[in-house]
Amino acid sequence: ALATHRVVVKRPRKAPCIDGPKPGYALDGKSSRYDIYPRKALKPKAVEQAPDL
Image (cartoon, rainbow, N blue to C red; front, side):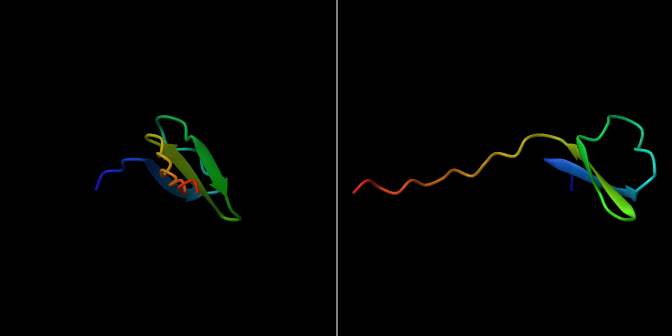
């Protein structure tokens, strides 16, 4: 399957980023880092409004 919203790459914490575009953001842990490459924005779910009484 192809990624439609984001690609997440798990890397060693001190490893350089993969070649190509820079990650949109990264989540760091004790021994690992997750580089997140956004593809397109997620649309928020529509909020249903309660009818006026």
